[in-house]
Image (cartoon, rainbow, N blue to C red; front, side, top):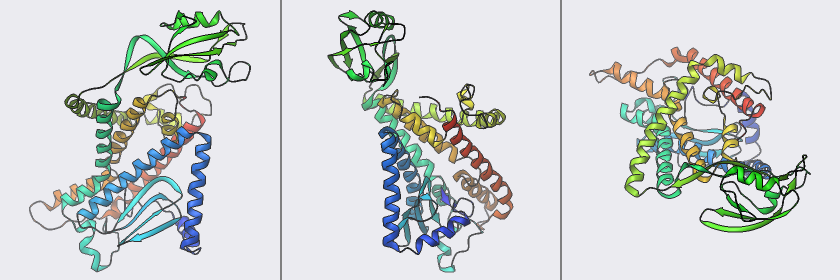
Length: 425
């Protein structure tokens, strides 16, 4: 998001803290900041390496969004004075040329500060020719939309990699594979499946040479062998191998392996030309789905609010996923799930980028689309006169504050919902 009088997310209280941190000196700030970030990453990695990986990918996506704004501003001759990852007090920073680069502790976003985004920004007269507000319409349009363009570019690249190299996941009818692996068995020890090293996506072909190509065959073969040592034939990717494990015994005396099944997923790769065609076709489809998803949320705000205000462990909170908002916390939870294959995670990465790209283009301040709408309105008012028209943004402040309040409620509510009633992926 391009920083302006509306989008700079640094509250007054944080500015006071910022000055306190600044008094520590650059070296101490750097050490403290590095310690905070490294410590946070270690804690997250200790909780789940998968969640750490997903969180790092989201941070990368946020960085690339702002990089788009920054590069577009530099290419069009605008002055960008700040490029920060995160919000809150400055942990550490460095200056290259006229831009200060740095990191702040709340890695929930980032910002690039381009001078003179609106008529409310006070800028030294020497910098006025390089302000956003003095540029041509195409240049303002490029800078304002550059973040979403980067999201769309990442989505296109992700789709091409999926179709051409990773393989599109397609449900294979009539077959099954391991969906989940239970860590602990009925006795509290590691489950038979966990001891055998079975992984999600594996296909168990047989138990003691009895075919288990159908799920009910596996259930029958395992149920009749409580506590027995059995040999399992497993297909993982293109490799078939055998492992031995001792089956667990359930409360009813039946044998247990400790897995959950799902319909098998076949990865289908496409040639170069076909992958290009499928990439743009799927991009258009997913963009339409994102637009529809946003409309469904807007059209059902009452139901969305009910979900956000639902109590913990509410069985109805996740009934209708179309009106169930998901925060960055939820995105990390879903992306880190061991039920997802690499191809499915790539699909999630693509969907995330397309949704964020579309959402940021909504014609509302402080979103990037608000700046696009203002630039377009100003260009229409100018007509053929050639006289620069600047909108009085003070008139938009009440509406902008209302949007900010709604986004804050929506964002914090989605985080609460993901913690109180996780989707369970």
